[in-house]
Length: 238
Image (cartoon, rainbow, N blue to C red; front, side, top):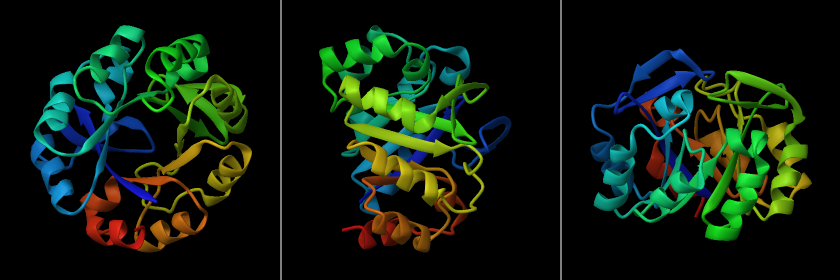
């Protein structure tokens, strides 16, 4: 299982949120590049980065931060937040970003996802499904829908998506453990790689996710708060 240490960016700085509420933003480090370098030293091969300002403004905002990490570390970078057009995707893909995460557009404009997969392949395009009570949410988690998360996942699989990041919003930033039940439901519903996001607290959570056969786990607050040692998490997943 791949461990994806996470850096969420607001105002150019690394922050973490509680249950997706932007008003709860708390700075967790001074510099994204230096933080990414520390992740690399701990053995990480990937890094998960989110443009929180972009999610709200529906456009790329903190682009320079992501490109700096992509160009000045050996980490494979995946980026989400504010990506709404094929031009946005092309910009990142041609500037060293390994994967582009489509969230709100997967729910609201699946045709764009289809076009993106056709142009850039299902390896470059990842879909992030964020859900409240099992139903997909959009626009920085400020909008809800009546689309059940596995239904959306199956639509994305049919389009050609290979990897899905699933976030239970009620777990995000809470250090209360991942939603194993929903993650297992998703893993059984599609053949896509499933990445767990939200709620990871400690090594026991990592082991539980690994034992469920998931493709990956995103770890943010647990690393910054010290309840999870990144190096240990990577080691148990080898």
